[in-house]
Length: 187
Image (cartoon, rainbow, N blue to C red; front, side, top):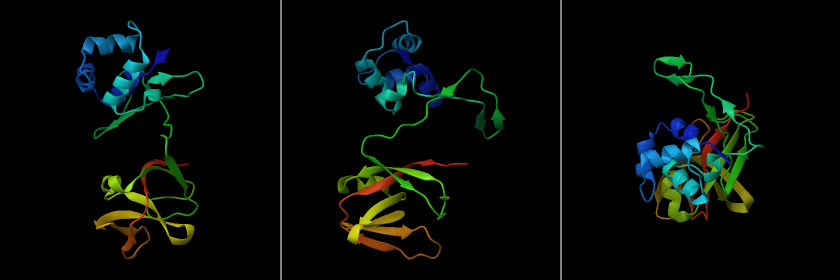
């Protein structure tokens, strides 16, 4: 099995030691290094521990033959674009379980026609995680509202539509919301 542990760790800007300390239970930087280079066999348990420490899905750490990777042409910082110091690749994202998508047919707010918005479902006990984020909320008669969650009043959500000069709207006790998590922009 070919792993992408090193690539993901570097993309996250973490050192071997930082990943080792973030593992539960903590391990050593040497162990993480051996798992990255393949000098130690990576088990499913290790993949799960390292993925949790990196904040990614375990599948993101495994390079499968049918899963494409993207070569990194440049890195970008406040000083501009630079050639990478070493060969880097990125693994395209995969949707997480329980995700839904929104297809943008007409430009609105920061979104353009052709965009796809991947959203993570949230139950009422997790609505607070979506504060100041764009969310999709079910409303009456099988319709939806896509707007910025700007507050809560008891069980009601206060939403600001993305259209100019829109007024906030209160949606009482929605059973769920879908928080915008990833924008896929077609060029």
